[in-house]
Image (cartoon, rainbow, N blue to C red; front, side):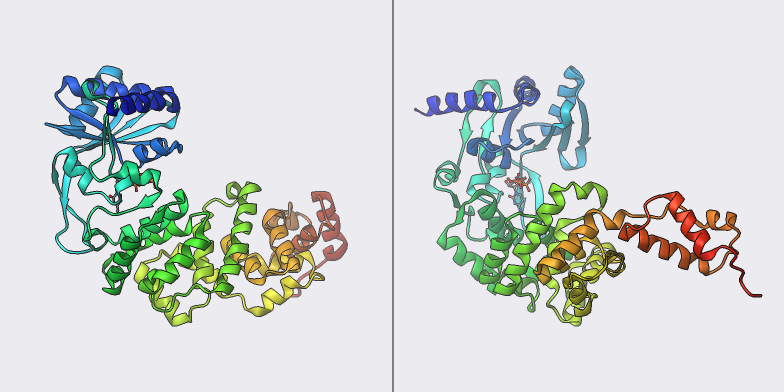
Length: 441
Ligand code: CTP
């Protein structure tokens, strides 16, 4: 029975994986065994393989003397694969053609000096390596060594949990050891459509009641918030975070109420529109999670936002974008909501607001004219430019001075409104309105 399952697994697995990945994985198993090492696929890759979800980031655990670094070196010597090794951490990365990447790590055990601290790491067995992990479904290993090829190692019942779509930690202390697992559990629920078991939910509530999130460093907390706010299912995720007290654990004034839920649902359709239009390419540095952060924090008083910003250690870039969504007052929204507002006025209202914050403003309003105006701005108006510049004005005999800004500004407005469409028309307009201009001494 067991052997049958293993044979079926490895057949399916061969079928599901792209050939370069499959060849490298089986090759690693063979080379490892010759060196007396046991090689395993581990973590999310095994989970997704069993769920038949695509995942091209393979994680390999190597048990035995010299571990991952020794195996990676020997493998690349034979097959000339590009590698990077990190002997201090006992890890290595293989870079395959077509951007596939395989991360290797020596099997290890971890101890937590105190709750929420980064763990102390020492080499250990595969069983110890699996028992330091977060959830049963992530604590599975598939053996790659030829003598045990395809053998599934499942000490915590991850296989049955995958079938019944359950999320469970391995031991009651786990959320305290690493509170980022609370965030991970909630994300996995949404991403995989799984449920945290009722006793694990109680453990989360108990851990949160000990104010454990306050022990996480700003960097680690921000990384979790960034991942969470990047999920397409961010709305149900935030509502679960609110109910369980995760948001209050991040900052006591953070709330997710039905009104914000509506705004953020609209924001998700704005973000989808932005992606579908390929605007991410035209706005380099655009960060969808920051749009969600702007929405989530918009209701905070300035001093609360200030203390949250400091707690998270947000970069000036990120906080600047969030501020961009906080600053525009109701008058900006009113103007955007008025369909009579000319394009150049829309342009001037939004030109200094980061695109993430523009999408948030659109969602905040929820009115059709504001949506149209914001999307017109993001997809077309914001790219309009004048073709002539100060040099051209000089050539026309206009003496340099603040008037240049005025002329080019008026030209840009007309370009935005579509009244002027070429360099020739720009020059004609300047000649008509400004030729012969002399600045009084
Ligand atoms: N892990 C853990 N505790 C954490 C983070 C990670 O135990 N706080 C372990 C889990 O076994 C996880 C593996 O490290 O499967 C790899 O972590 P990561 O790449 O972050 O997650 P994946 O499970 O691979 O999920 P995905 O990449 O799909 O988000």
